[in-house]
Image (tube, protein in one colour):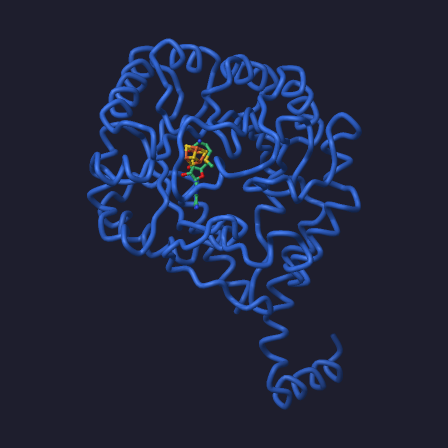
Amino acid sequence: MTSGVGDAVRRVLRVVPFARPLVRELRARRVYYRKLLDRPREVLIETTNICNLDCPMCYSRQALREKGFIELDTCRRAIDQAVELDIKDVHLYTVGEPLLHPHIAEMVRIAKEKGRRVFIFTNGALLNPELGEKLIDAGLDCLTFSVEGHEAGRYERTRRGSKFQRLLENASAFRKLRDKRGAPTRIEVFSDVSNETKEELTAFVSFWKQYADGVQLVYLANQGGYIKGIQNSQVLPPAETRRPCSSLWATMVVLWNGEVSVCCVDFEGRLIVGNIFESTLKDIWFGKAYKKYQLWHVGQQFSKMPKCGGCDAGLINIAYQIEELNRTLENKYPRWLNEEARSAKREARSGQREAL
Ligand SMILES: C[S@@+](CC[C@H](N)C(=O)[O-])C[C@H]1O[C@@H](n2cnc3c(N)ncnc32)[C@H](O)[C@@H]1O
Ligand code: SF4
């Protein structure tokens, strides 16, 4: 920029009251424009959208989208296409319970044979030793137990249909098996956090440390507005100050029937951008529909997309609020935060820097 133009810009910034915040915003958004041609980091493959539990904070049971299990060939096709797009991480779940799938271990094996890192989130209720052994032998990289609370009362209220004692037995048996085999499978615990529960987090971590190598925490979200009445501390900022949902840049989602969605909580399949039987993940990622959605987010036109207007799930990714919780935990257990939480913190910090 020549000094003449620079001076003119500085004058505008001084005189026009909204110019400075506008420039700040444009700088922050530049990151997302730059990343439009990057590749996604991970693919979520919907092993099934059926669930054995009925958790009050989850919309899975109420969703009207056709229920089903992915076929092995569909899963193989999704993994091959993920390899073509150079996606490193394969997550074998979306909005149902992955351990209900009779071929879950086989799917882990297929993804491992293709050199991917493989992750499963589960409510853990169905994790018997036989299945645990199969998952470990197939080379699963990380198994995450989703839990709330560290005593039967809260757990059984929030994981309706599961028994706390049974979960502890399953988690303990899985850990023993992993340790006995010296397998590299990481074990984590994941919990939704709200203002009401965050005081208990230190006790939560101490308890679950016996069973897991790490913990992940996210704020309870309304998941595209599907979940009503969540007493959440997150306040959805006005569209003009809201950042794009980072999931649109990081994650592709293949539903059990081969449809591709841009969102991991697309309970009703309202954000479909293609189908792996008619196209490939690579073509879909670089295709018009995907880019249109990303640009709407960059342009803060969230309401143009079904479900994004009132969704607070993306705020989790910004990780500002969880930062406070992580700091508490980090002080107490400095080496225990997992890599994901650490990188969320780094991202949050660099986001803050970008915004300055
Ligand atoms: C939808 S579940 C699917 C996998 C498996 N059934 C499970 O519970 O881990 C994936 C994750 O979303 C989390 N989740 C469900 N409802 C949520 C909400 N309203 N806000 C934030 N996370 C939520 C669950 O706790 C779980 O860890
Ligand atoms: S959070 Fe998981 S276990 Fe609970 S109802 Fe949803 S999909 Fe099922």
